[in-house]
Length: 142
Image (tube, rainbow, N blue to C red; front, top):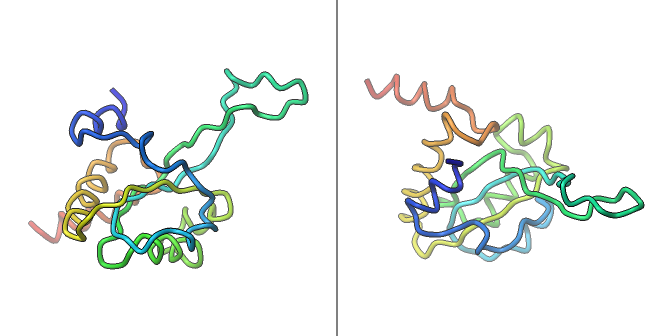
């Protein structure tokens, strides 16, 4: 079962019901709201590539990073990634990254859900989330 399918079962919602992915440089147009987000790459789906010119007819969002906007809003958090992300992979690929997000009503909800998503990213589908950061965190806790 994919990560998205697991989250659908656990959380009762689907990313597909949220706003469509947008290029990261458009993050300044986001609402001032708390929430969770994914950063990813857009790739063409060769199964649906039927354009005679070779132009991909269908693009697929491939998540690479998950995060939360709890201390700052989504707009500010994603603009931080765009201008000078703390994450090396995000900095390297910033010009190619897209984002999708889910607005949550309260910062506490955003923080708790974001922590859960970041936690499961250790072994699952988010290659840009740094596993070492979590290993260091748990080492300090014990």
